[in-house]
Length: 115
Image (cartoon, rainbow, N blue to C red; front, side, top):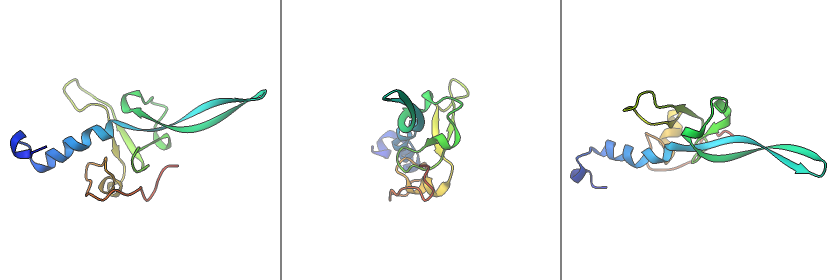
């Protein structure tokens, strides 16, 4: 995207590029598996839209789908405000993650990943 044509600053242009990546994140969900006569509960990470995250799926059950770092969920408060999205809890994750607001160009996995 050419900033001069659209009229955006380079920071605004970068924000637009990363905007889509933080609309989805990983959520740990429990799946029931039948094994013979018994049923096992197995946690699995699935990628979902932030809009689909339930209130009880916060904290250690939600992570960035790119770096596996901790994220906080922001829900849209007013009709004309920012849409539902995730934001890294730690700035160092945001700086080293391709989906981060402060991404510096060298993608790395989080130093404190949620497993």
